[in-house]
Image (cartoon, rainbow, N blue to C red):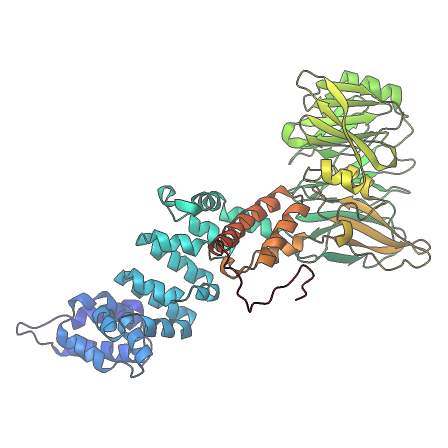
Length: 612
């Protein structure tokens, strides 16, 4: 029999239910009924669904006729009865739902979906729990996402809050968060109340987005392709969330500059842009905004001015106009910003024009301290969310807002502009020689306290800088001679470099969870770079297993990752997982607490050295 359509099966049911005055069927009704009985026997989905819709109106004789064509195998028989809407007959044959659960586990995805729909129509929550989750909690680990979603919604619909609360703390974190949201706030009570509330407050979409951007490999290696290229002026920068790396390379045997982008989740590079460079022109800086990438290049000797372009999402040149740039560009709340001889210049998102903002005091400092023959004689760092800008030039540091108001001006004891990074809107880390730094505290009244805290090396980084959004130049300067600064002993030593090769750090991610190193041959102008991330890839894997299957070792690993990772989004996810695991294992420890029985005369005692 050819499978029937839903519409035709529904028409057959309507025809089959028509009766004569004496209660018998006419020729057309008998023909329709025979097709329905045959379709049910052969497992036609459209026919069985149509019969189930009208099961309440079937006379006893018709129900018995449908039973005569049911499969002989008990498990298949209960499935058949469920699919044609004969719930009373199914419950009589399988009162506990064990046969139906067995058949459900062996069914195809399409058949499982139909069974779930049939059981939902019956509204028997006990059978739903047994069929979908099984009688053992361990079976939760075997269920698909669709099955878990179905089970949790059915439990919520039938207000089985105790079981739903237990289910939440058995699932993987990605399933626990949306399931916790099904529990009303006034039902998140007891020992798990605060934990359930924290899970329900976190967005499932936010979790998916955070995990989707994490690297899958601890080390991503990229060759230059059709090298030779120059590595020394290579500029690289991560997007603000660390999801993508943008890096430029200079082809030394052709007049070309190339821009590559690498999503961390895949590790696969793609060519985003190529531009012709003037003689001796090199790349100066790259700014990754997340949704836009800006590329600033020096146009070379004999060609005044700079070349600025937006290379993503669409490549467009930003024409030079107004005073020349004397700093690299940095992120701003509206786009990017740089220092000019007269103040600041902005390029807003989506714009192809430069917006100049005169800042007289900044212009005076620049004129007095910057050699006009030098490229980029000052440094700029920003805190876009707070609309703050810090400029170091000559022997001075100025902190401004994006309207050009000078908030703080501080004179330094040396003439070289230091590296800097905002830590918070009221604190700035300022670098000194020998990779040391001090933290300046800014007050709302414009005051400044220098040296509130000082640091150097890994201990100083962990104490005062870990977890803050560091400026890439500042972070790279700190780690250029110490690749273990951010990762400690977890970053394996590279093989001994051959003679003529060198390795150095060219950029660091915002929260210092990833670094990019370059390996090169001095005499060949060739090389490759590596993105190193020893911790982030582990987060994706550690959160996959159901909490029901978690081990104390997994709990310890989550705590270690939480202590070592700086990205606040990832740390928040790990904190949720740590709270769930702490509840599970602390509860188990509590169950095992109590008085200890005294040893008997034949017990073996072990000393501190584990000897008898």
